Length: 252
Image (tube, rainbow, N blue to C red; front, side):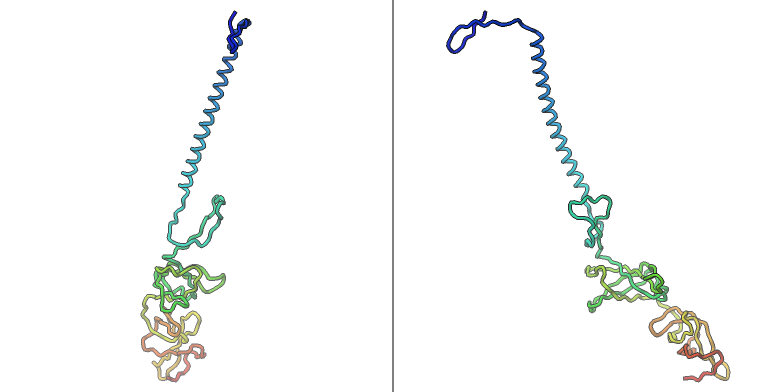
């Protein structure tokens, strides 16, 4: 018999039942299991927090690595996505370099044939009086349009003031290398290939017309430089008069 002391100091008998070791063991096991579960739950929470932190750090590193640096100085002329879009594998931006630009010039087939790669070019812009830009021929591209006899000449142009922009029309003059020959009127040719002319042959008693084959090596709007002709030789200035070989000519 045990004594149970309460606040009123009354003594009451307290009887204990038989002790069951299994019950005690079960309670202890449950307590241990509960403690273990609490520990696992705590550990999971901590581990989850560490993983979240690591993910955030990893995302930050990836964003830092995703910084795009332009390889040239220029301006963005085309943007292919909006903020918040996933870029995937498409082109993000189109950049236009300004310190050096390309001019695509329209030239006839005859001019294109005469312009060598590396020829110096002077460009001017309509409305910009007195201002010119220097460049050089870097390539001769294909026809301007299919079936056309004009070709595109590509010129690399220095743009120090960065005023030349895409789409601005320009006028250009290419400087050809110097040539040596005899100058004749361009109208003297008998054919479109500029290979035959009519001269005034005065070796006989009468001055008569004679066909001569020449090679054009340079020209402008009015004068052509040819080889195959003697200096000082008289030429029929208009090849479209219908003069024939052996026809008598009168000196003008």
